[in-house]
Length: 510
Image 1 (tube, rainbow, N blue to C red):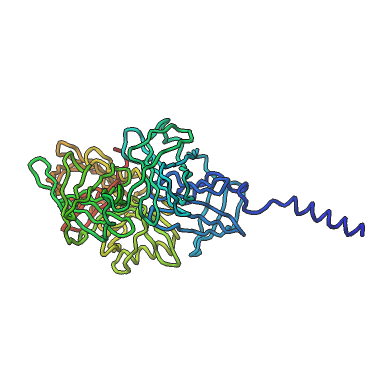
Image 2 (spheres, rainbow, N blue to C red; image 1 turned 180 degrees about the vertical axis):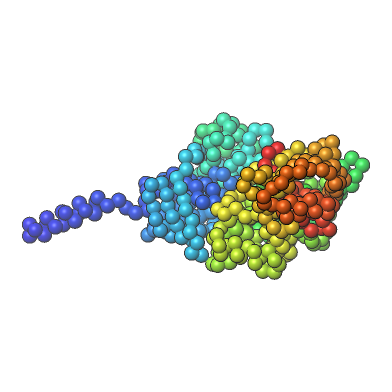
């Protein structure tokens, strides 16, 4: 009997000395994955994704070696779950296997993440559904671009708790807060004006009843497209707006120039559409009785848009995004909108993306593509960064002039930088002069532009003899002689000839 009790006692000691696997104490805190995405695992199971405003963390859980991440990207959408199977852990590093079998690595991050907890309350004596969705936006005092977002389910009661995770380095001492309480996509309560709150703090914010049917429009039917004209000096600029299901938007000016992929969301009882475009200033569109839109924020004057059955641009434009695998199929997540866009299996670009996925698992890519019925047809892939990430700074479009443009792709072929030779690049001056390097010799030439048209004239160059790169240098000069148009998409400059991209350049120094 004594031996049995001694055995039980020793067994209890042994068990008590083994730390539980996957507890919050083990892995709570800030982590960054191999795609440079930041996750904050709160000790109480709350999940923060503070460096992205297009998607919001809801909760996390670690059980039996499986990490589950729950997120939301729309107040009217569903909670999405992603499961990662833990393979290895230790020394501030975790290695997971995704659902499709690909490997992702998380590392501890020193990024300081703050948390704002607060309460919404209303004065009406009424009961709410058991579960509602709370949408919180934090803005700088003098900027329309949100610095933090929270879209989370909450318990319906007279006092509704909310939580927002944010990056401490980007947060001011005072910010503006907007809030809405929704059920089944319908706004029940909302702030009437922005609330100015202090950080840190525990604000209590009054929200007001939005009466169903009172000045409320039915949800917008998508896909929808609109056309209008923007007056710019003595010129008339065509403006097109495309709204797709799932919150994907495309705003174009002048047909091929200044195309911005982004997201859209209905607000203010479906009377206002807010269109975000990465770090660019959001624009809003007020719905009118006749079905049209009044677009604000694109210029000093509002632009009247009328419904128009217009196709997406047939010419391809540059898109940057993250390529990953889901069940062996490539998925493209566009950087500016942070939306997964279904890929068409047609076109040269799909086979390229499929090969990249097979070789790398995940990568950041720049591709030429066009949209068809909510799907992306990739015609060519220009730039691949293994394990690369989206950079929101890329979408604050680089200026054409006085920018150091590094040549990345020519005629669909990656540019090679040879040892002890300069990298191919281009700098365009306001005086009509251009200079750069073909990877061997420095060159100079004159150039002209009109709207989105561009031409180069023959110039001169140094006469250095290079051991490598003669054929590439010749191709670069031949390319310049064929250029007839240009377009900038974020940090990428595309040079065109006969509506085809002949070169892709990346802004390095502005």
